[in-house]
Image (tube, rainbow, N blue to C red; front, side):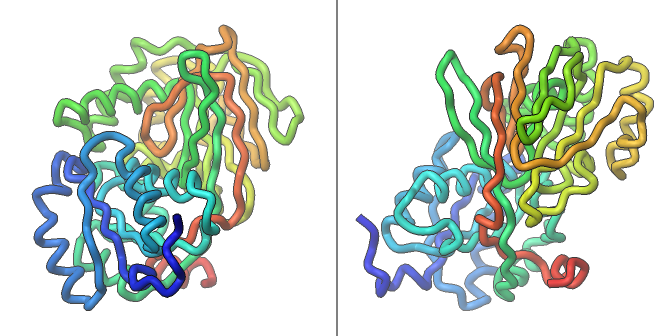
Length: 327
């Protein structure tokens, strides 16, 4: 049962802390972060996540208790879980909930889009200023063990080679490793495991590609993999999904162009195609041969169906982002 609108929790913040984020930086640095939040005068409670997807349930539980303001102390994966909690609950509009972030993760690609500093003092100051922005959310229907699942995301989804690299990096994280250097290592090592896969792709129900694909990204924001600009033209509130498709290519050419992933210039390669659309559907041969990651978290496999929910997530962004983007 939803708390009454006069519930005092409406003005209080819930801080969701992922203690394992950033190779346990969430746990190690929490006391420092907590003191910085206290100095702002923000009233808050805090909860630590205890296992994968726990932040989804925490978010739903505290929305029911009347909380409307959430701070994520974690990385892109923790943000993804909180956003999924917001969309799974159906009692209040998603835009009634405000999200702020203090990045302690290894990639922090969502925060990079909005110039949210990795310096805790600056990140907390951004939250205390309260400059809000409504961004789009993506939603994907995918499959796992023959069952259709659904996942929301606010940064980027990757398929093919991108999903393999994310999976290898996530395994390293679970063992206490991870980070942008781990992503780079897996980017190279994965080349010797990955086989180009046959994709059939429709955008807005129109077939745009049929053939072998090396990697594919679909999303809202520009960055993944610790600063790689996979969707260089993405606008997070335009109501459109940006798509980057890399056709079958050689291992040598991938290695030669890795540096170009960081400034988006890899899209000039003849093997790269870019699209925009409201819906994207992907079928592979074999049908379950494409794997998926959303906001860096490994999900399931094809067939895949993406759509967008315009201006549905209320976030706190830096004043620098609003200044540059006319806010």
